[in-house]
Length: 255
Image 1 (cartoon, rainbow, N blue to C red):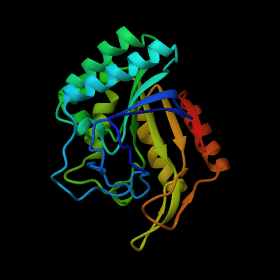
Image 2 (tube, rainbow, N blue to C red; image 1 turned 135 degrees about the vertical axis):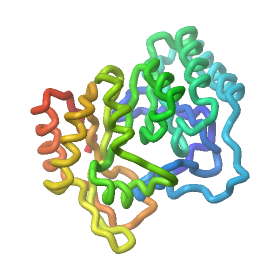
Image 3 (cartoon, one colour; image 1 turned 45 degrees about the horizontal axis):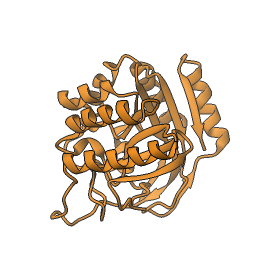
Image 4 (tube, one colour; image 1 turned 180 degrees about the vertical axis):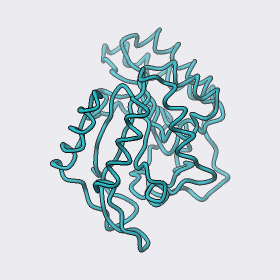
């Protein structure tokens, strides 16, 4: 499923309420520095000629939609950066955040600003500082075992979980939520199960080290580009959630 507009929705989100989406990636294909085997947008787009929307166009389109909702008296709970790939790879991401905050303050002052991200770009100071300004950073860690992470997320280019964890610790809880998708299955001859005791034990150590404000646990909910993937059971999600709660960290299950 691809989003064919820069500003899309609002969508009734199980996590974020009435959520107006911001897609900083091309409208005709997914571009991401991960190529997750479960991504609802499919695998990465191969046409390198496609372009991301400009900062000016994003601002113009968001102002138009927020004005429209304000005039109708329709509340927006969240302005959410999501869309067809990783939003923080847009070269103007930090300044777009500033634009969106200004528009939110003027046209939808009760709305939160959220970013759904794979966390890879937090190692860039300008991206990290931009993320610290917003209300909700929902950042992905699907496994703390790099072999598993490489199968699930298929990072493109250099990736160091240790470096990202060190940066996530600097949020000091604050506006950081770690989200993890739990599932099992097979992909290209590899067996995957990030709900196993070994996987969960390693993941919990990372969660305890980061100490985010909260953790979101969820499982497969839409068709996936890779076949032979299976949802985690609600019972297993509840077991994992209790382990996180025992660390004193708020947990939300979307299963």
